[in-house]
Image (cartoon, rainbow, N blue to C red; front, top):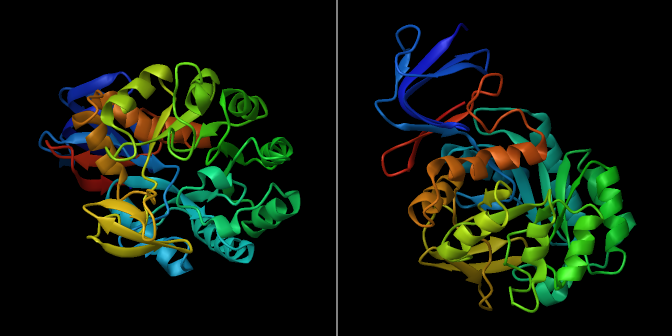
Length: 373
């Protein structure tokens, strides 16, 4: 297929918004980007819609009524749901559960990753949220299946994923966590730190040992105090750490989202942390072994009050970052695409020549209306 030109859009690039802008695509890659009149008549005119890079979700567990840990088919269906809402590349997330069940699901991730880019989504690997987490901050993680850091269990899970597990959350204060973080790095897995009762010093030690991500900042960890700075400040102080943000107005109030972007500019990754109820109505769902009740879009454990993931899509997260938290669309777009893509080493996430031609089209209200990839 030859060159295709998409024009008549508000194109969100790293340098700003091109209005009107155009993009030429050839062989699945962005060939050129410009403002004003394209070099020849456009093959597609977007009529003034926003064109942003396809979203990259580091942390999701389900959507569209499907939970990623239930079956290979449900995993694929949840990925397809999120693709329709602008997520062109995703890590498939698993929550804490029986080791044998996690190992089986890691094999499904390997199968989907090996399938490569498909019309239903592009799985770039897996994410394990547990089982080496702190019971005091387990949140919606099932405490029955939490384990102390165990290299043997780690190797079993990574081997089951056949090299496709890309990120894993560990509580850095647990005995043996430092060694586990080192093994993750040696295996090419990004160590994330979270579901942790660590103070500033212990969390900083985790980042010094090789931690690269703070799992859903402020959630599943100590808060911020002027005499006890805590894990969020430790993440902000770690120069190459990425801070995950669930921008739904429930996990974090919008002024806190704005504050995080000032604490760690250029190092925020918007995530969904979505569970099966994303895109669905109120009712009862599951998140791993746990039952979850959703009311008014708020997901909590059925037998408690802990938040149990979100009902976000990445498109929702970007919309709320702009309209709720007041971020410029260029910044929100970078946090949804560029920052996570760079973390994973993916050739996408920005609208610039040489990168993958993966786009979400947004209307005036910033709702995703089409995915071009």
